[in-house]
Length: 369
Image 1 (cartoon, one colour):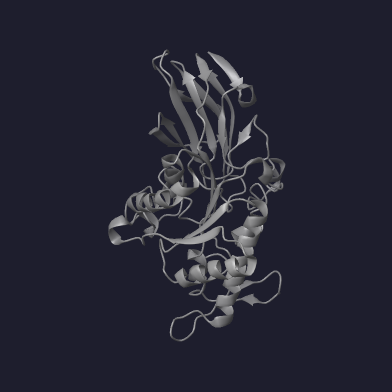
Image 2 (cartoon, rainbow, N blue to C red):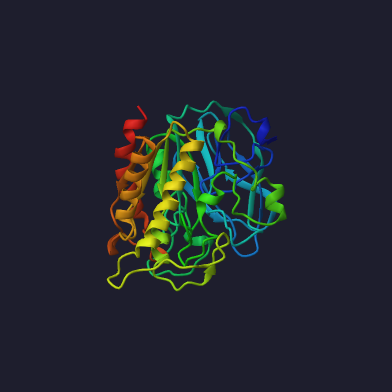
C-alpha cells in the first residue's frame, strides 16, 4: 500500500467549488468530491470531519453504482473504499459529499487529505461539458432519503446522488457544481429572513459558512469563475420566496432598516410592491450570473413544489431578455410533486427527482452536442 496526497495523483477529478487548495481538499457544497480510475485490489481515503449539530455524510460509487452511503464521525482517519477487487480490472471510484453546506453549523466540515492504494491510477475519460446548479432544498436533495412521513430536519434526509442535479449531470456526462441551501431564496428565506438570500454569496467560494475556521479554509474568498466556465447554469430558486408571502414579518432588512414583509392581497395574490421586489431580486441575480458566466445558457426551472411563483419566473425571464437583449436565458417548467412522488420532509422524493432529470436532460441535450 502507498499513500498519496491528492495533489500527487496525476489522474484525479474534483467536483465542487473550492479555493484552489487540493491537499487537503475541502468539500464545501453538496455534490463536491473526488473521482479516480484505478486498478487496485484495495483503496482507502483519509478524511477529516467535524460538526456540532449536522454531521457530514458521503456516498461511494464504483463504476456508477452507489455501494455505500454513510455518516462520518468526528476526527481524521482512514476510511476503506475498496477491498478484494480484481487488481487487473480498472474501475471508477467517486466519493461525493451527500449533505449541503450547513450554514446553521459553523463547525460542520469535511476534507479529504489523501488516498492509500495498492495499485495504480489510470487516465480519466473526458467530460462532455460543465454545468452549474443553483437552488434550495430541492437542489440539495432534501427528502430523497428517508421514509415518507419522516419530518426530522437533519443530515440524514439529504442526498446529492439521489437529487436531480447529479442525475442530470451524470446522464449527460457533465462535470458539475451545485450551489444550494435549504430554506433559502432569491430575496429571503422561507420565513422571510432577507439575510438568507443565495445571490449575496454567489460570488464567494462558500460565503454562507461562518466562523473563523471556514474563513481560514477559504469559504469567504472570491470564487474564480474564469477557472471553471459552464455551458449551462440552472437556477431553481423561488419556492422559499413564495413561502415568505405566507409568514408574519419578523426580520429587519439590513439595508433599509425596515421590517421585511412580503404581503398578499385579500384574494391570495401577491401584493404588487412585494411581487415587484421579488422580481427585481430575480432579475438582479440573472445579471450577476451573466456577469460571471458570459457565455452560459441560463435556465430557470420552476413548478417542482409550488406554483405560486410560476408566473413570476416567466415574467422575470421575459423582462430580463427584453431589457438586456440577452437571448441566452429561458424558463423551463418541470412536473410538480404529487403524493405518489413525495419523499421525506414533505419534499419531492427520488421518483420526482427522476422526473425532473428526465425533462432537464431532454432540454439540455441541445447545448452539449
